[in-house]
Amino acid sequence: VGSQVTYFGTGKSLELTGNSTVVQVGRPISYGNLTPTWTRFYVRPSLSGQTPGVPTTGIAAVCLDYTGKLLASDGKTWVNTGKQYLPGQWYEAVLRINFKNHTYDLYFNDLSVSGNQFTPVKTGLNFIDPTVNSMSNFKFYGSYTVNSASNVYIDNVSVTYFDRFEIISAPQKLIIGQVSGPITAQLQNSLSEPQTAVY
Image 1 (cartoon, rainbow, N blue to C red):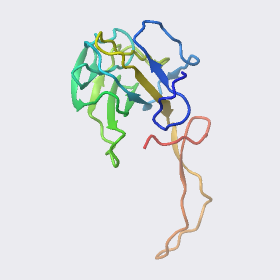
Image 2 (image 1 turned 180 degrees about the vertical axis):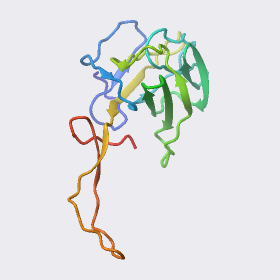
Image 3 (image 1 turned 60 degrees about the horizontal axis):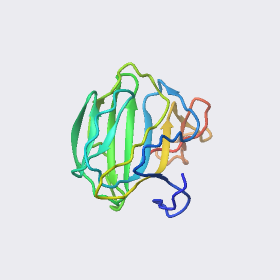
């Protein structure tokens, strides 16, 4: 994680080159049975030479296909989301993971466009392995083509989940016909720590 090519223009990003070296990124994680669990990352893709097979293990997979199409796994097959992408441009991918029914929704936005609507491009996609009940890792694969040395860049990876929606402002007396004081609500995890909304 040392590339200066980042979406925000600061910090470092993960650069995926054409070699086959496996890199372990970060520490082990385990987010089990929390629905929904949101995963998000920014990606600046290049154009590969062929479509890879759907992974045989794990929860979900997203593929930026060599034809410029965005594909998503639906169990054991790729499905076309109807979205296109351009190499060398930044995109945001968000997965809303449901461990109760073992499905996920995919959101995909062009970060060069302002005012994107936060609506999924595909919903109800099936887990690759329907017995999986927790998240333990991310795997990112680069693209390979004999005609190009372009690399893929990954930035701003996050995992978010919420256990409750809590009113944290002090109690107040409401009077008929009068506007109340501000009421502050907060998304929290199981330790009552504040969480940032995905959008």
